[in-house]
Image 1 (cartoon, helix red, strand yellow):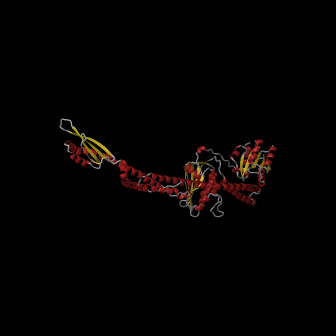
Image 2: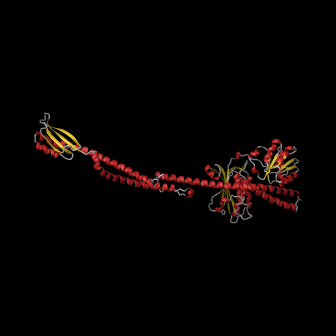
Image 3: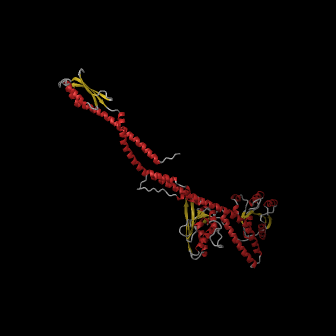
Amino acid sequence: MKRVSLKSRLVFGFFAICLVITLGISIYQISRLQQREYALLQHEISSFEQSALPSIREAVWNYDWTMVETIASSQVNPLLTYIEICDMEESQCSHSGVVGQEPYQEHHHEIYYQLSSLGNPLKIGTTYLQLHYQTFSQLFNRYIFSEFLVNGLGVFGVAICIFLLFHLGVIRRLIRIANYTSDIDLTAVEQLEPLNFQTSGSTQDEVDQLADAIDGFVGRIKEEFTRRKQLEQQLNHVQKMEALGTLAGGIAHDFNNILTAILGYVQLCYDSAEEESKLQRRLEQVLIAGERAKSLIAQILVFSRKSEDFTQKIALAEVITEALDLLHASLPGNVTVETSLDKSLWIVGDSSQLHQVIVNLSTNASYDLAESGGVIKVGLISRELTAQQAEPLGLDGGNFACLTFCDDGSGIADEIREQVFDPFFTTKKTGQGTGMGLAVVHGIVKSHGGTIVLEPKVGHGTCFTLYFPQVPAAEIVEVPQDDSATILRGREHIFLVDDEPVVIAMAQEMLQSLGYEVSVCLNPVAALQQLLETDNIDLLLTDLTMPEMTGIELAEKLKLQKPDIPIILYSGYLDLLQKSELQNGAISRLLYKPFTVEELSHAVRQALADY
């Protein structure tokens, strides 16, 4: 499509309009000239009647045709081109001028003479006049050029002035807007500057409104690009975290199997060793180290966990206060903690995990402030987020308990800000950190349906903002917890299924040490056949992940034939379970690996007590 500039169109439009206006004015003026011609003809006739006709009347009455001829010739002019005067019998006539000069008007007049005031006037002769005039076409051909030239100078002069004013006031700004919009690069929209028309006074015309609308549109584009960039960064981070979480969860699951056997056998050895012996003390150190490994695996599993179904109401301010009170003694003496907590805020969650969030954030902050000292500021307020505000955070709009955790330390360098929540990433010296602190915090907050944000760097220090969905206290029913650590024994027959020989041998010894009769099987398909053929089994204890058949599938198939057998399912990574798999009633109890003798004994007794 051919491109025509607005300036060219306006110039062409002004020129065409000026031509039409000039031509119209010229034609109108020529028509006025013709009307003037007609008016002159009428004036000439009137002048003849008033000035010449009385003299002609006297000359005709006196039969002085010499005088008549003199008067007639004196009346001839460019308008009155021919005059003829005759007596009544037309025996005597006098004429002057050129007859038949086209175009002309004719005018006849009878000459009367008043003899007395009482009698009727006597007709003594006639006059015949031809008055010449110019037609419209003659006037047009004669005057059109001069009229068009004069009128054109005036019209075009005014038009040029109007165009220059319009060009200065409108066209130049429109050209600027056109150039601005055509030069917009969507790949670098963040650097796009607004038009910023500088208008004099407080009024705005339509071009200013158009510029403001474009600036507003560009501003919305920038906001949308920023929002999409944030969402893209968030998506990339989520995908990376999911991949790392899946990897970490798989490693933790396999390591839990190994750790279960190690801790189980060490505990059996510890229980059978002589009290206060050197061997028992050494085994105790192994158990302590094993518990540390168990805690690290638990952190990895928390990080990799997507979400949990919490049912316990939590007064978040109480959890924060309790955690900070416990940490007070371990903080450096030159570090102070300032709190401002809204105690009316409740969320749904797990208090021990939230306690761990405060511990991990405090540990990071105190490490940064250990040398220089400083202040840790902890705030808790209620904040309502609209859908537009919540979307970049990956949340739905609503009311949130907003926890801010800030310190005035050295802060986090810009180049590593996007890595702080990655597992195993740490800036601490070797041996002083595992790199799981903030990753665990991130995982816990996400599992509670919230999010954590590292605020943009302002001055010095580090500031995290944590959002937790806020709920009314009356909506949640508290679930009592049983923290008993007493070993419970029994004599029932337990069938144990696991594909790991080391784990199944360890669990068998644990159960036998508690007084139970134990049958074992390494293959779930063979185990199902034996269970269906045996009638003296009181409880099934099975692993979750096994080849050929999972623990869930084994439990479901067994329940179809023997619904009265309680079933305990254990695994190092119970997040692999789906909600639907636990709602059908096939599983009586869940047991996390690695487990202690106390935890195993309680799970067995509780499962048996339900049947």
